[in-house]
Amino acid sequence: MSRQTTQKILSTVISGCEHMRLSGFTGQVRRLYLNYFRKAYVEKQLQQRKGYCKQCGKCCELAYRCLFLTESRKCLVYHKGRPRQCTTFPIDERDLRDIPGPCGYSF
Ligand code: SF4
Ligand code: SF4
View 1 (cartoon, helix red, strand yellow):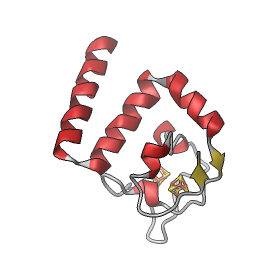
View 2: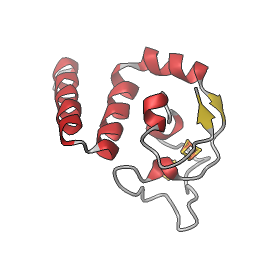
View 3: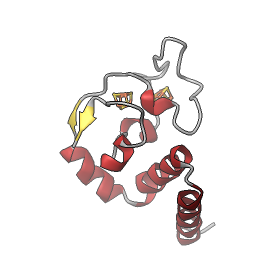
View 4: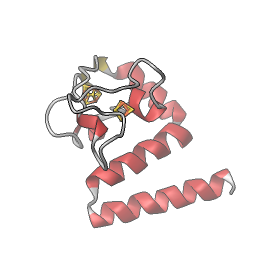
């Protein structure tokens, strides 16, 4: 599948999810899209991001509960190569609105 086709499919899925108001799932798909197709935007945002990750686990159960999140809400792979989706959360203010309560990061 070409990059352009993949990009088009992801954009369609995102707008479809927005329409259905599946915010947790929408956010996951949106971040996936940004991390793979809008890398310059993500890098720019990360430079503006302030604070640090408190490892609260709020962003680890948005659309589904991640298998690496323990009962005590710790990430089993935090220092062992977490996926880019995790290290770049939150990318912007919109991501912060997806989680219940404060994150250690702000913009
Ligand atoms: S919500 Fe913020 S502070 Fe909590 S684990 Fe995710 S990035 Fe870290
Ligand atoms: S890999 Fe770790 S940081 Fe990423 S979603 Fe799972 S528990 Fe959270």
